[in-house]
Image (tube, rainbow, N blue to C red; front, side, top):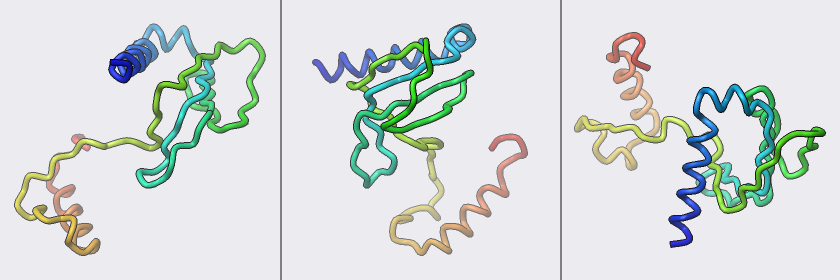
Length: 123
């Protein structure tokens, strides 16, 4: 239950931060004590701070200088996955079957053909 409760808190926190009027109000923020996974096979970096200035991630690290008067939120029960984008893609065509065992060059050519077939503005 504790894991669900912490996940719920983190999800609610993210929802609150990402609402348009909240973004306009909370431009400077430090999120502290975060475990960050920088790669799938790397151990978590502990006690990391993410400094957000003017709605942009300005600095990430264990020794971030905290500006005077900035709001800080502790998020030690949250998790950050660095560079986690385009994480949900479906490759349904038969040519992608067994992709884990195909040579990288062959997959790159297939991906290029697939991308070329997607209408402009969809990617």
